[in-house]
Amino acid sequence: MCRWFDSAPGHQDSRKRHLRVAFLHSKAPMQTLPSCPQCQSAYTYEDGAGQYVCPECAHEWPVQAAAASDSVRVYKDASGNILQDGDTVTVIKDLKPKGSGGVIKQGTKVKNIRLVDADHDIDCKIDGFGAMSLKTEFVRKA
Image (cartoon, rainbow, N blue to C red; front, side, top):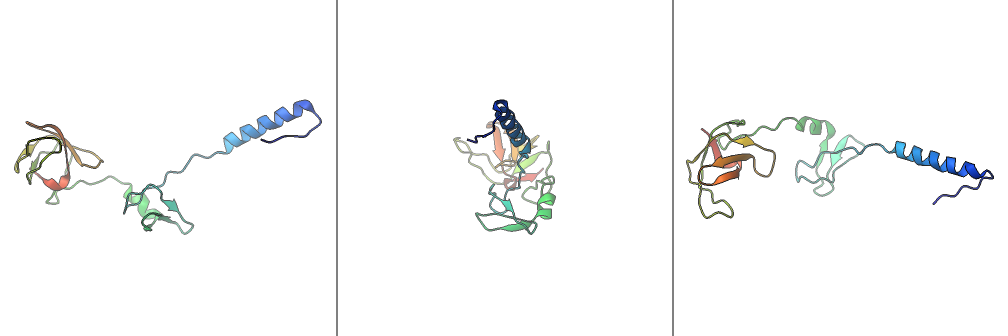
């Protein structure tokens, strides 16, 4: 706590109010830094040489490369074909969904896929199974 020792009684309150307002206006918004491209750590920082550094895996990359990597993500299937929302894909491997007793057989067609940026790349509905999330490495564009 800060105390002011001035002779004028009303002078103390105006100084405290002025300091409080100046402090509130001096706070700049926090800058958001990209997460590490190698280990996905959120604790990256920028050093003085124009590079980002990850303290967890010690990976360093230039600031310009981080700006270029923020562009649109390209989703590719197991064969390297580019996927888009609404495409029809075919499952290339038997998949056992977690929490389900059934198996999604190889060759099952999945229509009207939706691409998402999550731990799984595709959200879709499969007949007999309902809503499902798939990875692009297990499908091929039909």
